[in-house]
Amino acid sequence: MSTVETIGLIAGGGQFPLLVAKGAAALGHRVVAVSFKGHSNDDVHDIVDNWKELKLGQLTKLVNFFLENGVTQVVMAGTISKPKAFDMRPDLRTAKMLFRLATKGDDVLLRAITREFESDGFKVVGPHVYAPELLTPCGLLTKRAPNEMEANDLIVGWKSARELGRLDIGQCVVVKDGVITAVEAIEGTDAAVKRGCSHGGKGCTIVKVFKPGQEDRVDMPSIGFRTVQGMTENGATCLGVEAGKSLFFDLEKSIQFANKNKITIVGLTDEWFAE
Image 1: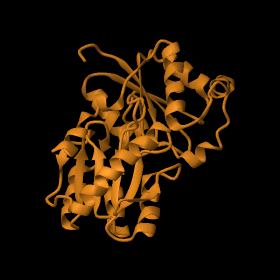
Image 2 (image 1 turned 45 degrees about the vertical axis):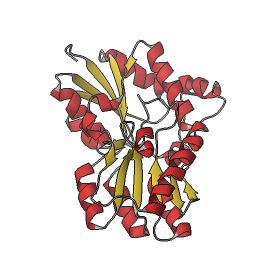
Image 3 (image 1 turned 180 degrees about the vertical axis):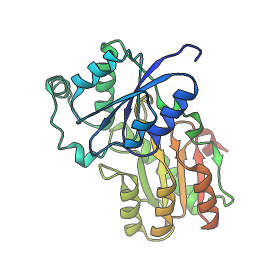
Image 4 (image 1 turned 120 degrees about the vertical axis):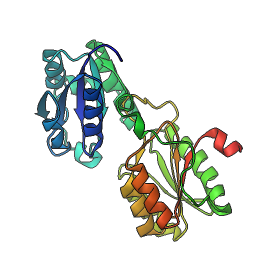
């Protein structure tokens, strides 16, 4: 992007908001951030031009802060604790938005939030625009390729996770010998991996995909070193992540660890299964 923008960063937890802020600043953009008490990585405050801490559900104050700072683009990056989010006390605008929703799955909710920002004239941009290096590469990423059982479980997981995604339930499934042993729900990927492996035992396969029709500007599946480390702790041996539509944090570190522990990692696409 050649023109200078003012980026309104909605910062959650983890390293993602930091990487996005640094990426946007490196391109010459001004970055202002909103963080949420108990959810966000406060280190982002030190690397942006201006910031404000709010409570979840204070949509009016958030929008006003962005308007006051001349924000032209809105970017959402970082994790929000879903269980903690149930304690949200919505302001009037947020309450009206929630009331209009038939369901409150992740994708439905994030689409509604996106529409709210767009109604105020902001352009909502995917965070990967400012951190493209995080997109998962395609193909075999580790030294070891999937064995026959793992390859079959990748197929089962790929199809099952996509169907669950259509229902806006989760992005990840755990598979062992063709049997789904866990489905990700509100607990998150790492907890689902632990639960699935406790049922399936050693040799489980983890598959994480982009939900069909998902709003990629505000919600892309993500994976990282902690998940790969957790696979070793729980006996999982294969990880499939949708390539180009998911984020992989600490990829090089994760691959080195996987190779050392004989875990296979694959960046999945429809074409990969056709090979």
